[in-house]
Amino acid sequence: MLGLKFETETSWADVAKNGLQQLLTDHAFAEQKAASNAVSIIINYSEETEMVKDMSDIAIEEMEHFRMVHHLMVDRGMVLGQATKNDYALKLQKFFPHTGNRKEALIHRLLVAALIEARSCERFKVFADNMEDEELSKFYIDLMISEANHYTLFLGYARKYMDKKIVDKKWNDLLSFEAEMMKNRGNMAKVHG
View 1 (cartoon, rainbow, N blue to C red):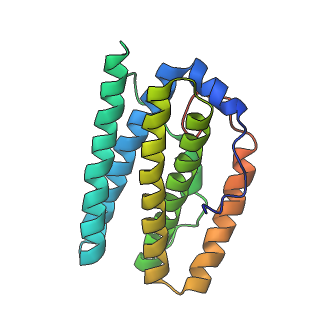
View 2 (tube, rainbow, N blue to C red; view 1 turned 180 degrees about the vertical axis):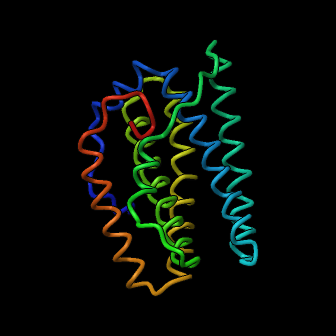
């Protein structure tokens, strides 16, 4: 369904469980960054009324996810740690060359957002499926569904604003790049680590 070209090894779930506080902190800030991205799209493409409505919904939902992760941490006696740079997202954002074409820049941004959501969805499933903690497993299954919906929405908008064949070529190239990058990951308790 997600079209990812590299599957996360189940060993990552053990890394994540062993560094649960780090994972949850990283996850909380990833939700904040996703909300900020949706708000930034609204600011930069405010004339796209339908997309603005959907990005507003995503921004609110992502901040709700942040709050849910934070509550989960507090309930478990954890304190939200410091935010760190998301090198995964930064590398994806650098994949497409800078363009002065506003529409193409939007497509690139939507594709990167779609891939981040797709990988988050896949990671949440791996984590939930390899979790003895029933509360955490259910929590991540519920979030996985939301991430899948966001992935579909971002990719759908990219295909709406540019010829589908061009978008699909860009998407396929981005997926291949990400798959190579993911081969060297899976050893950090981070959502995309």
